[in-house]
Image (tube, rainbow, N blue to C red):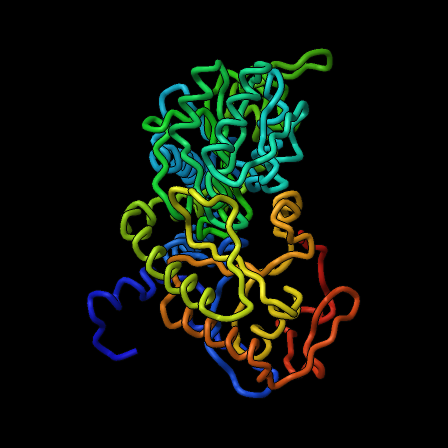
Length: 441
């Protein structure tokens, strides 16, 4: 890329500073390359404004709500101001409340215990929006959005439901459902609507008063604030009437040995010492995203997504995956397969020889992948504020090398995982290199 960018080129340069943008990663064949991050849909890197805010708060980090000390009062103000920032970000109405949680999964499980009836969901949902509901009625998605909506309407008309729970943007393909239209349909049929916005919130403006959505859930770690905090926002009546999500300090007004008077939401569902830094991180991310302008974010992603989709589609043997033929819009997620290669092998090659990070597997959406005939999984490349056209071209060129069988290294599958043989890179970064954790596939 030249030092002076044209107007078109500027659209596909990174539009925000994110942590890890200067990270150099080792290659198995020797040398290093700047890390090309295509795993934003799993966990987005923190915005620089977020890390700056956390560093600013650390010296006064303390317990909230019940401390008279200076640091505690600062932390209390920080925590409640964060709630207000998120409420403004979503444009919540007066009867909607913001509850801080651990992540989207936590938010949905919280709401699930508050729903006074059955919940209708699609089979293509992330497991977090498929598994928690106590009385779930699963509708099979069709090949088009229009027919899928018809099936949802038919289900809601056949038997009333308390809640319709839908994804805002598919974590498999990025495709966006017409949320305002679904909200109007649900309300007309006496049903409330929940939107799993884990993939939508980082990419599109969400205005709860404008679209009419009753409940929304998203994660900080996908919103450029990876510090273990999430949000459930929505109408307070169900939240006030339900049993507390956790029983403990902070969720109560008065306790005796024989009775308990619970607080109203949000305190009702935030027992224990809250994640003050996590809430502040989400708030900083919300404020930064609003200042960046979501139209600019959408244009940036559209340019990069088209470049990636066109580039991959032109390679013989590569198939780009879609759920619906008529999806009106999509965020920056491109999922694909390469004939003759397992997804894990592709991901291992991209990482080991090209310094590219993608996600492979079934993305915690097993029924969706099975419906697409991809029970063995696929490769997901997801884009974000720190992505550039150079990164995209690097991924396209690497896949071309793979397909032309010009790899420099051999790869073997052991214990279900693909790895380069021999592995020459060190993964020892301040901890036991052999340590690992179970991960959703």
